[in-house]
Every structure is written in structure tokens, then in C-alpha cells.
Image (cartoon, one colour):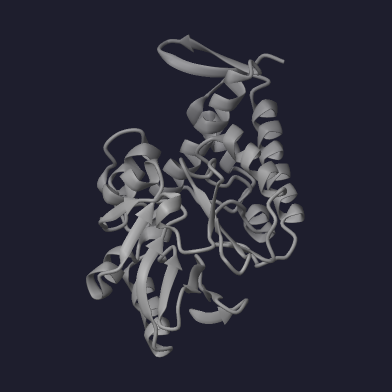
Length: 293
């Protein structure tokens, strides 16, 4: 764990629960793609960097979830490196209370103000094409998160953050956190058109061919859609529906899983309602969702 893996002349990743990219931009300077889950992950990444005699000059964040920006603050404090994030991801990176607030739908209670959902604040700058290392390309893959991006390096490798999940994760949990279902499907289809030598997802194996894992994720989304539509053959409240999505999986209901899965189920409901495939009604001041087709 936390082993430095080289994949091309200049490109590496640190093998850990949320892979961190390391790219040499000169003989001495390196940049990171995401910074891990917390300050300990940042410390371990910095140890790898310094063991090779390199200097960290910047962190480029694919998105603002705590397990991808958790090391930003430690790395900034110790190296003075720049941190960059795109769009709404920049807002959350600078104001990390927004992550649990957006997922929860209000000010999060103390059990959801934890390092898993809320990183330490870091001083991020807006991510634009102009601040990328020479030869890099930026591409957009929103859906899992608000304005998630990926990077193609000068060596031609694509670091794609959480654009896909592994087969093991999908099989184990079934429903994967997603902010916007329609965008996620569009991004997965787009990802299959991206040309790269290697694809480096944060939570899935490195691969030359992204088509099969992308299709697996697309299939997982449609299975969840089918499951929701089946559950809504009779009207159900949100809590009843959420229980139905938990049942039969390895998910264990706790405060964090409740908000993560609950937020995702709401995203599915929005997607299906906007398509006219479900509707809702109120009975005794309780909202019930039901299938329309």
C-alpha cells in the first residue's frame, strides 16, 4: 500500500485506496493528481516524492470529495504547492463544509462532519487550461461529482478520478454515490471516445481499454433504475424506497451511508421524474413516489 508505480517515462501513481497521480514535469519538479483521503495520505505521498529527490509544485484535483482533496492542506503547509480545482469543485475545496451539506441537504449533523465527508480547507486556485503543465489536456466527466474533470498528460495517460468504479465495488454495493444520473451516463459514454495509452481510475484497476469498465458502470446504473421502477410499482415513501435499495446489498445503514445512498437515490428519482417515468403524490403530508409507465 502507498507504493509508487511507474506507468510511463514521466507518469506514476501511488497505489492506495484512492490512487494519487504523480507526474514529473522536470528533472526535479512533480505535480500530483488528487491528494488522498486525509493528512496521513498526504504525508505518505510526500514521503514517496521526497525519497526520489523531487519537489512538489502543484496538486490538480479531479473533484472535491474528501478522499481526493484530503491531503491538500498538509501538502500546502509543508511544500507551499499550489492546488487547483474546477468550477463548483473549487468552491467545495475551499469550503469543504459544502460537501456534507450538499449530500445531506442542509447543515450536516456532527456524525456527518467527519473526514470521510469533509476534508480540511485548502487554498485552491481555479483550474483552467492555462495553469496545466505543458502538453496536458483537460476533459470533463461530471456526474459522480458536480464538475469532475480528468487529465491527459504529455505522456498520453488519462487520470480519470471517480469516473468509473470497479467491478468489485459495483458487485459489493450495487448503488454507487452519484450526483447527477444523466450526466454520469453521458460522461461514461464520452469516456469511451477518449484516446489514451492508459487510464488511471482512482478506485479501479489501471487499464488500456476503458470501454469494458465504462459499460459495466453504465449497466450498473440501468440495473438501479430497473430496481427503483420495480419498487415503485406501488407507491412508496422515500424512506421505504431507500430501505428497498439497501436490502439485498452489503451496505450497512449508518449515518454516512444513509446520506450517501439517500442522496444518490434522490438523484435517480430526479432523473426518472424529469423523464416522466415516475410521479409523486402527497397523502397525510407524506410524499409518495410511484411509477407512471
